[in-house]
Image (cartoon, rainbow, N blue to C red):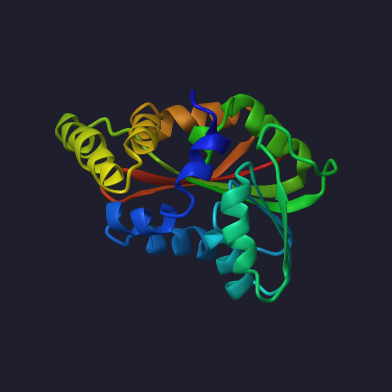
Length: 222
């Protein structure tokens, strides 16, 4: 796996633009779906925050929250910090596998399109559980591998022809080929549900949409 910090630092200046292009603008609706699906309050952490889309949506819709956000990419964080005009969000530079927070601190944790890029998904989930209070909620939104052969063929074509080509137009072919590979190699919803269960979480809800290609997993710490 490439160094994710180096990869995202490299694409930080075109990240939001290319996201809009390759998702046809749909990623904004997906993120709102994550934020509005359940009540969010208390100490809230957004992991792999990127340029801060999720944490700023939480700030907009859920006022009774203390907001924290973290990402390994300092250049992505720089862009998020520039958007932090209300100064309500505390940003920090952390890998998901090494969160610099106390045990049992957070009431709500979110990860949007970031869990697949961790160095170790199991270690990342263990660390998430460590910083969560008992009964706290974890919401993960991620791309899903389809079990439908026809849809899988269409998705593979898009991932390995269209997305890297768009990356090439911005001089970022290698980076977007890696991101396409990370999507292609991720799990089906059922497989990732088993990983969450094996990590000690209880599944509250699994919401799959966009032709089954995006899933929001809602889990709690027992």
